[in-house]
Amino acid sequence: MTNEPAFYMKMLHAFVSSGEEPDALTCECDVLAQYLCTTMHDAQVKALVLNDEVAARVFVDTMAQFVSLNLQKAAYQMQRCSYERKQIAEAAEWSHIKRRDNWQALVQMMDDKYATQGFDKGFYNREFGEKGQSDDDALWQTLLNDWQNNLDLRLALHKREFLESRRELQNRLLHNNLKAVTQYVQQHGVNQERFYQSWALMGGRWNVVEYERLQQVVDFQRRYPVLQTITDRMGRVADALGHKRIGYSQGNEEQMQHASQSDITGISVGRDLGALLPTELAQYADADMEDVFLQKYVTGRLQTFDYQSRTLNAARGLHTKPARPCGPMVVCVDMSGSMMGEPSKVALSLMMSLCEMCTSKRRNCYLIAFSVQAQPIDVLNDRTQLLQFFNRRAAGDTDARRALDAMFALLNGNSRYAGADVLWVTDFRIPLPPPTYFQQIERLRHEGTRFYGLQLGIAENHWLPYFDEMFKIEDIKMEVR
Image (cartoon, rainbow, N blue to C red; front, side, top):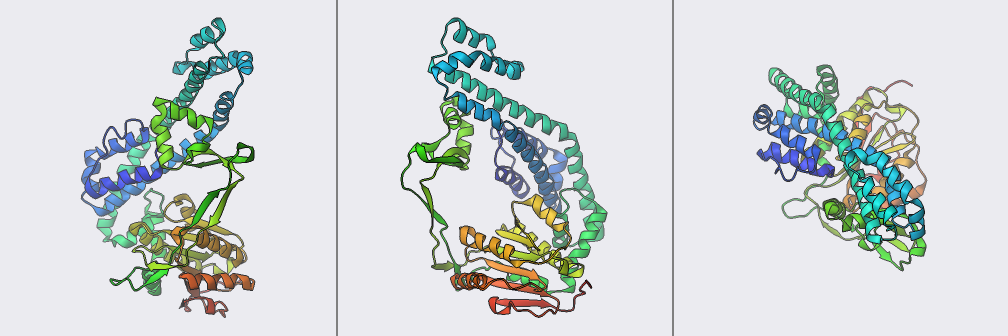
């Protein structure tokens, strides 16, 4: 069994905030949770983490990287066995004639794969061969359940083998990080907030040279105080009387006009119990797989048939409500060639500040890095892509249309970002898009979205009328192209 990433993060945060260790029963069927539980029992780790805020942050980030690595590996193994899961679903639909003609090959294939896991080939040879019971639906379902259980067991063994192969290295990394970081911070009197901004981009591995390189980027926040002003401004917070208000949206509503199986268009995921795939029905009927089925139901990950007759209608509300305590943000950062040198470093420094604020306050934030193409990144969840962004060099031409398209799709289609604060960080040497784009900006502003800009340099800015507020850094060294 593998839980969702939020499950493990909840375990880590509960431990560092209160010393709470997970119940052994909670971890019984999850090798990764068992490992985290064992680590939390380490007396040396516990003493450091529960008495030092920096050590607590290092612990969470180091273990979060390990969790991510294990979940990626588990997802890869799950993908590899997708064809076999499809075979199980197809075998569930076999006619009695096809069972009689093919049961021997199927049993032999399962024996070749799962004999070492206890698959009982002799039992099925007797029942299907000597007794001729391939027409017995209950017995056939037993065979399919046995197949699914062996497949699940193999996946669980892969997870355990992968974790065990990296256990010693991870333990050593964790202890080295905790010791080296806390000593460095104490010896150099490092400000915690400045430390967190650099540490967050180090991928859970302490390296003095890399840390000090990142600190040089953080230092732009001292040189340009407006960066902190922007960080404080983004993501509105309602005042005591709730005077500040932002637009609000309910998202989408789904309507089913009809649901005959003749209009099946593909496979989807969700909680629709009336459209389950046969493999999901098999798990539902199997007492041993009940926990897996319930986990997928709660998280909306059940595999279901999708129908052409299912229509998705917009349900965007135009009313307003008091601003949420942690307002959402969308940040568009220009990474084109005109931002080379100091402008791109200032932009990265601002993003370091914003990302740290979003992480500490759990604020929804979407980063859209753009030049010719646009790359949307969920700051709180797309950790790997975020690290890649901070290692990216400014290059290429500028086309704002891709970034605008991604921004509009997010603001119009995701209720969590309705009425968000939008920030553009660029030199505004950007060709103007067609007027329809500005019409959409004006509509969003009318509905409660606010648009802020940080202009780097002194280029003529034709975008000013479409922003609520424009910040500027003019005394910045621009690269000569």
